[in-house]
Length: 374
Image (cartoon, rainbow, N blue to C red; front, side):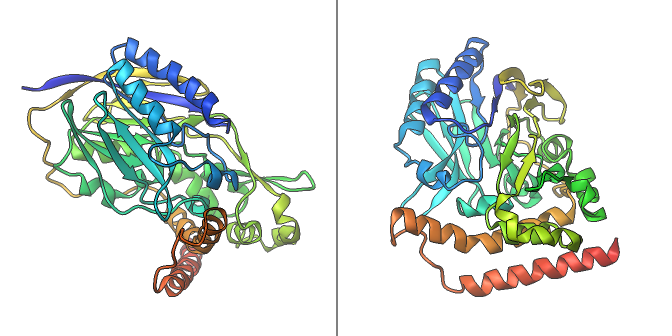
């Protein structure tokens, strides 16, 4: 028989703060969702630290038995809920952005973010497997943020899940503002036509485009995001600046001061529960640190899609920038974690240098081809 369950989506301010303070805020939001009848509660990406580009990310990574997952298990048991969220997870040899789903009886499922977005690759490495959490409530697929813009990942869950849980905390990097040392401010849309095109096509990445992917699977979806102002320097500032402003050589005069340039952006603020048809049932208002609860109906058998997964709808330029940044930042990540945790961390894989060079070359060529076609 079809069954109804209640899902909760929680939005939190993403400004970095001590873990104990952020866990206390999360605890109040989880308790409220449970009081409203939620059976599955989904927190945002890196809910325990907040979102930033900082060397502090390396030291704030936790083992699976650290304070954050310990708190999640306790909260799930206390409120009799399944609780999901992501943290920077310190594994045997690497750091991952791991989405953890814990159950009230101590069950635990883990999914590692497969596609670090651009600058994120300086702080954690990519995962490679999907995770289906087989719970008494149903089978849940798991994704983290930028993963949701990759139809190949959605397709791997086809016919295997009752619902999708997505933890996100994405700054609106398609609409970022560069703040230069002399006070000049430049929005992404003012850099080039390609940036303007990316701005137009990316606005619904975590809204209608994400829901379209879930609807193609025929399943409800929970997505969570952050709120507030994102303000940070960029890793590899000189390379980041030149890469982002390839079409604006007049801005290269700032390269010597690139370390003082700040990146500012808002957040997507697309925290909601949607049904299997892609219709939003409940959504957290922009700017609010709050949660919503909505009831969804799960069928008695797993939905079996009969069509290919839809295309992402996001600008190809976004993927080019992402590939370029990932290639450049792999060695930054590797060197940093080996410095902080010792030589046993982040071993160098055979062929990594050749692969990174090939990816970098492909990104540059793709950028040039895109400029010719515009």
